[in-house]
Image 1: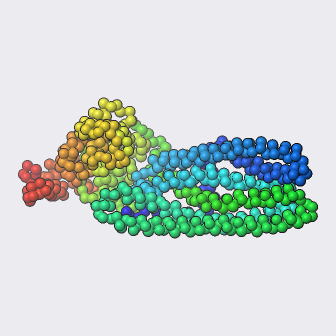
Image 2: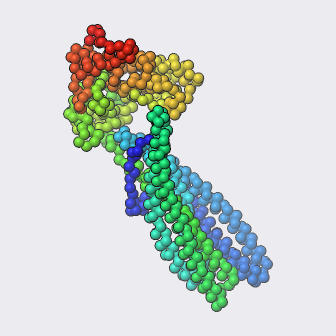
Image 3: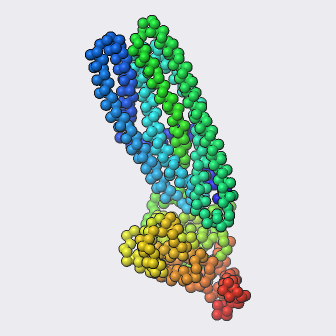
Length: 606
């Protein structure tokens, strides 16, 4: 488990209002649902208030007046309105539910689409857990805010307004006294607002780090166990969860304190209102039913405010989640297609590096004034020490990054004038660590070419040397590979990865250390598949195992951001330079492993 995580953004209080507006704009895309639940919740509040008014009439006009006909009529009205009340409750619940899920769907769709636009560099510096928590839990919280959070807010506002309206009809003087309580309640809310939000921001930040820690530990479980890191990882994880516990505790403590504070203000106000109501009754300004109704309205009006105190913390947590989601959506892609970018239909042709410079970090150049021409159909092998720039060249060709100076041309086009899809969809890659997706072997083979027929899939697998082991699997091509291909061996995954590249029929083929983790037999199968795939295609091979690149048209030794040696295998052996030293040392090492002898390079190899 790494101790380093993506550094979470810090948000200030001024972002809050804009975040809420943006969340509302997401909800307004589904305005029919919002209108439906607002109409329903308003009707519910009005009918709920009217029930109290009907109770007043039943007491004054029926019970106190001993008028059974009036009492019966009012009771029937109560029953009819209760049926209407239930219908509106059903309406706002189902509308809010649909609205919440729709907002979650929209946000996840937007985030996933935006993530596809972000370059490889974004994923290199951003933890998986950071992204996952936004697409999952943060989206749920914002969806709940737009539906149930705003529903609670709308219900509170309409309940207060309708209650005040009926109270004004009963006794306008006492109603003014109630209105004076509202600023005190508002002051309490504002006092707690920012502190609760601050603590929940800390909670969400720590949640991302914990999710990332989970992901790293699960994905790297073999390394963890092989190095005996279980206890150390546990201690680090305990530190993270301990920090989150403290932040959650403070947030919960503030939220718990919020409700009693609201209740204290409410109780004081109710006591004053009951006192003045008694005086009004003694003076003949109120009936028994009016007194009972007025006190009920006060309680009815204050109860939603107290409920809002309970949901306020979760609303603030959802706003913090919204800030995090929008921070992702506001991340600008470092590589974008030019307005006039085209897709020429193919990228077959010469590849030219024209005085290209590139750096991942400022003042740390990887390539400087690098120039190179690779003719169409040539197979180029790249060798050299780790960090010399081999993978950087490949990443630049794929346009995962762009040069900081100079230009790269493909088939005569400055490749910044081509769409990213035009380039990347026509490049086939087989990596050192092959990645398969959950599904069947067939699903993974067709991943880059969904319209491929079964016979084309089988032919590609045969070319890659994968067909024989695939048909021996329990369900053949229909066999599930598991998450990341965990149910297959490294060699099997590599052969499927190669067959996938063959099936995609790329214009440019890249092999990045694809044979470094496989056995000799699998390497021979991969070599056969490579030869079939590279025929007529511009190909790049990055390899430490130099025996795999002897037949390359050109071998380039990359050092210090440039090409120190270049030629065929035979030419470089005769030159007795850096490549010769690498090759002879590797040859001796292999002989020692096989024979246990201090191998001597045969004359034929020289």
